[in-house]
Length: 133
Length: 144
Image 1 (spheres, rainbow over the protein chains, first blue to last red):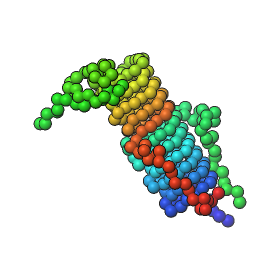
Image 2: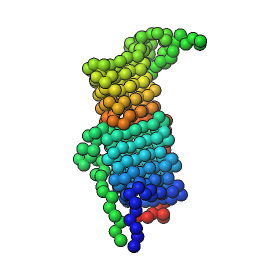
Image 3: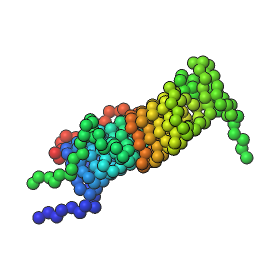
C-alpha cells in the first residue's frame, strides 16, 4: 500500500515537464515547468523562475518567481519576487511585492479580501481532494 | 563635496510636456497646456479630498492622512488611505498601515505585508512581455 505523503513534503514539476489538467496537493509544491489548468490546495505553491503557468490557482500561500496568467486566490499570502511576471486577478489577505516584479490585473488585498470571493468572478477556493483510485 | 545641479527635468502631469525647472522651484507654468504645475514634495496628514492631486515630486500620505483624489506624482508613499486612481512616474510604496482603493499604474510597486490594496494594478518592467502571445502547453503531454 502506498504511503501517504508527509505534510511538509515538496512535489516538484521540473523544468522539462508540461502538465495540463487539474492538480491538488498537500504540503508544498514547486513548479519549474509548464502548467495549464487548475491548482487547488491549502498548502504552499512556489513558481520557479523559468516556469510558465496558465492557471486558476487556489492555495494557502503562493511564492511566484516565474510567469503566471489566470487567477490567484491565496488563503494566507502571495509573494511576487523581482523576476515574477503575472497577468492575473489576485485575492489574498497579504501581498508582498519585490522591486522589479511585473503585474497586470485586479487586486484585492487585505484582511477582508477573501470574504467576497464566492460572489465574485474569482475561483471559489477548493479543498485538496485525494485522487480517486 | 559635489554641488547638485541647479535645474531638474520634470514632466507636466497633464500633457507630458518636458519642463526644465529650478531645483528649488515649487511650481511652474506648462507652456504646452498653460496649466500650473506643482513641482514640490508634499505630505498629507489630514483628510484631503480634491478632484486632482498632481505634483512632480514625492507625496507621503501619513498614517492619519486620507487622500481622495486622482493622484499623479513622481513617488507616492502611503501609510494612511488613498481613494482614487494613482499614477506614479517612479514608484508607489504601500506601507503595512496603508490602504489604497483605486487603480495603480507605476513602474515599481512595493506592498508591505498587512497593507490593503483594491483595484487594478499595472506595474513592473515586463509589461510588454505580458502582451506578447504565450506558447501553449503541448497537448500530447497532457496528464489529465
